[in-house]
Image (cartoon, rainbow, N blue to C red):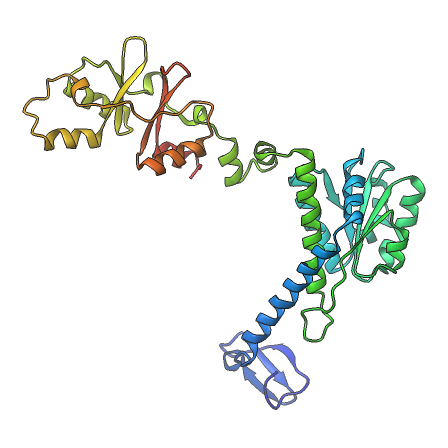
Length: 356
């Protein structure tokens, strides 16, 4: 609060500053307000309190947590996550994390549930109900109805003696000793603890289901992570007529022309049966000239790089990136199990595929 000001309110200002801070008959432009000298220490205190709240959960994990996992793993329907207010925001995130890590889940607003959305929940479902107090009226209205129809209930509250905790099949204690808010009112440490407990459930479920990277990618096909996990070398490699390749007896001149035609900064050198013998790159051409080559009519086998790095077509494109970065190369021939040429790619192809 600004020194000398008591009760204050925001008001639209007509000055060049968009907002002004008004108290009684005095107005101070926004550009005159400065952070409190205690701002940094207050921010550090918030982080300490929230970190302590999460750390305290670890010691409380036990049979109840295992019972919660068993409840969800044996669910034959969907996991529904619900909460009101700030707990509702945390419930939405937990539902999203579950859904993206192999546990089908969605959020239902408890107030809307009382006005028809309860029909979205069946007897085969599990409801995860979040409430710090454990006394949220909206949740306490729908939980008995769901219990009567056969749905199971997992409660996450900050009060093990609360009505919601008593109504639930399984209760997880997310209590915190204090909120990070200086007034000890705004949900801060309590919401962080509930979120962390939701993440702990999601990861434990992921492991129990054997959920792997490819499963994760199928839930994230639209983002860069999905592209990295779903795109294989065969999806981006050049093949057929677009594949630059010469025989070992071809001249250096022919190899240069093939590099130009292929447009990936190299040509593969392969025998008549397609077995890869070497590569000739832009870098090899420069090194050839540095050695004082007098004629470009010599055979390419004499100046090519032998036994080049290759990659299999079924490998992830992300693995091709890692290989290129590790060996500081920008092109890769693609070979089958017998070492025969089936494709080639360079770093630009991976950029275009948005793997990088």
